[in-house]
Structure formats: structure tokens, C-alpha cells
Image (cartoon, rainbow, N blue to C red; front, top):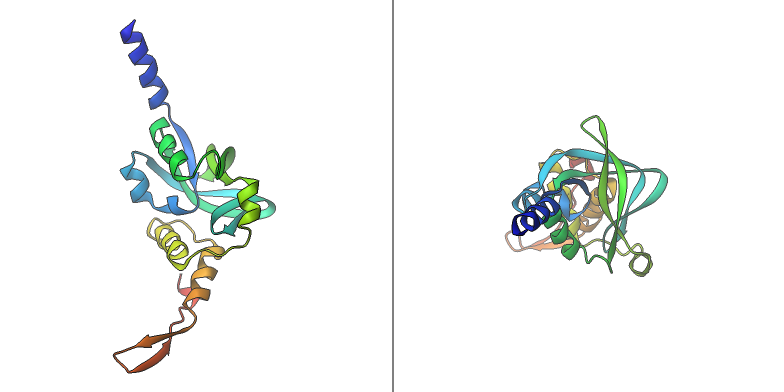
Length: 177
């Protein structure tokens, strides 16, 4: 009886599924440290990336969201649930993503309406947008314009430079990314 219970528990936790990350989870190294396997860059059609303090997606017939597709087990999913504030902050849905020339059904987190309305159009912080953009670039994932534009907008401005004894414009042309 104990062996059957162990087998059942093991089968539940080892069950694999695909997951689509479009925000912090563009960081492949961080996800792999947790036990996921990077499958490739994915494209989610008919959805758009939204800026709601944190990354979110919403259905949009003209939209496209770039992200990372991973193979995960139930332990990684439980860790993601905790990180995403599931079920109160983000909910879960299954959507179809194109990755490596194939369509795959993937798990994705979508901000719950209460928080989506509360944080609608609240900008990303520079570190959040820049970190997501750098992770995408490092892992060969196309960078969504929303991250690129937020980073470029934040970097426009004057900053003090003690070495030259004055101020300089710290603008990074978004075409660099």
C-alpha cells in the first residue's frame, strides 16, 4: 500500500506541462535553477502585453506577446503560484503558443480583474522593465515594444556626473535594443 501511495505522489509531482513566461520569467537561468527546462522563444497571438505595475496580458485580436516557453513540473508550478500571488493577484489560463515551429498548449498567468483595473497603465519601474528586456535579449527572445519604450522613456533625463562637474543627458536610443 505504501509503495502505491509513493508511486501516486511521485506521478503527480513529476507530471510535466508547458508554461509561458512573459515578464520576470523571461530569465531562463532563474527558471532553470528552479528545475524547469527552457523549450524556446514563444509567440502568443491575439494577446497584448500590458503595463500594470507588473507585466500582464489581455486578449487583443491584433496583439502578439513574445515570451519564454518552459517545461515545468508541479513543484515549479507551486513555486510560480507563490511568486505570482495565485489565486488572488494572478489567475491561470491555458492558451496556445507557437514555439519552435509547433503549437503548444501552455499555462499562463493573467492578472485578476480587480488588480488589472487598480493598476491599469501604472508604469513598470526601470529595474523591472530593464531586467525583463535584458533577460529577453540574453536568451534570444524578441523584446516587446512595451519594455523597450519604457526603458527608453525612463532613461531620457538629466543626471549628475561628478567626473565632468555637471549634468548630462542619459538617453539610450531604443533602436539599440
